[in-house]
Image (cartoon, rainbow, N blue to C red):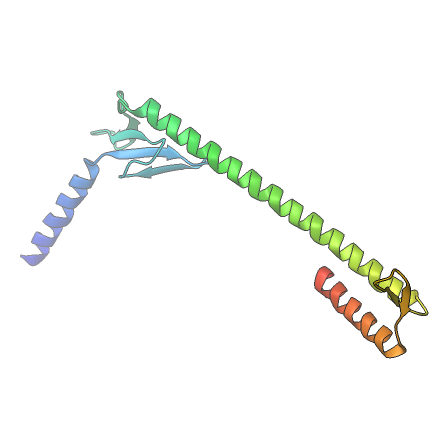
Length: 150
């Protein structure tokens, strides 16, 4: 008896689901999705009786043009945001490459130089001691590794 009741319940749920509204939408990648809940840009479809397939409703919802316009606006906003994020990423990569090039140049110059100096407040050269010069080279090497990676 319980099995028959469970089977009847399952069948009634299947029939109710078959009579529910079904919405068809296409995402930004062109993939088709079906759902029982409407989403922006979706079109109402229904289950054909006897044929078993899905057919597009002859009368789409009255707000379909507005929904499509909103969906198009959302897609355009998303694409614009992605383009902006990509431009920012390219700018960051370019800036990092410039910083790496400068750090390498500074380090190479410090290694090639016999004596390292800094410019004093009065504009004259103040030469570093050997220990200070070696520390400056170590600092420049660390800056190069930070800017360029290992």
